[in-house]
Image (cartoon, rainbow, N blue to C red; front, side, top):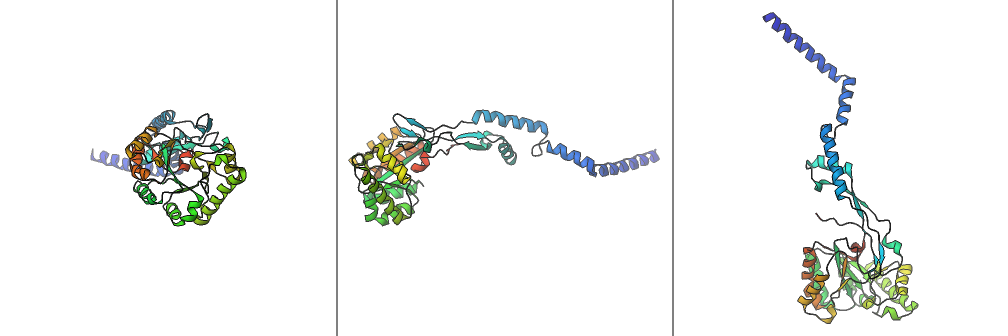
Length: 324
């Protein structure tokens, strides 16, 4: 019995050694490699198939088509909005890396619309896309210097960058204030030179008002505005075409007006603006006492609605903002 046991142990050891050697040979190693390649991240192929099916199901649920820019009878040119598609392979890799099988791990690709804002030609713009959760509290500046520091400090407090449309003659008189606005990271727009009624002046004067302001802003700030806000919102199609064709600028109006220049009661102004806050809204302000006192409340109201306060250019961009 003892001899048989010894023989059995010896036989087992020898076969064990042979088996190890066999596995290390190239043909078997290749076979094992092929099997591993059929698995996702080391996951058994059955589980990998289940994961892929789950991601494909999420793709059907979370994919969103792009929205084309369009002309609206009331709002004129409305920007498009990028769609999104789940990147299946990138999503699977991210899930495997994180160990979390949840929709929050999905990776998306943005899909641009077939029709962009530029495709619509020279058109006034009153708002961003109604699907984009962004808003801009834009400021037209031709006076009101005493309230600018407060407005800038409030924007800094909430880490918000916005767009200041500067009057050219104001920049000439107050270059240091213009620099302060620009140096604090805000977008600069053109607000004509002497605050004229742009709808009542001829082509040469239109060119002069826009061109002189472009020149002084470029000289003082080394920045070339791409947006033009006509004073008092007065414009004609001729103004819009000259701004775009000759100066490469889009003409910007507004969706909601604080009417702060009328010195409204701040709570009433905030309440009125709050009722109009929504996706893609452009809010018109000036550096007034009412705007300075009401800006924080308006920013809080926008944020509470899930809106991102940002620049006019960001609101008009088709780039997505996907909130968690």
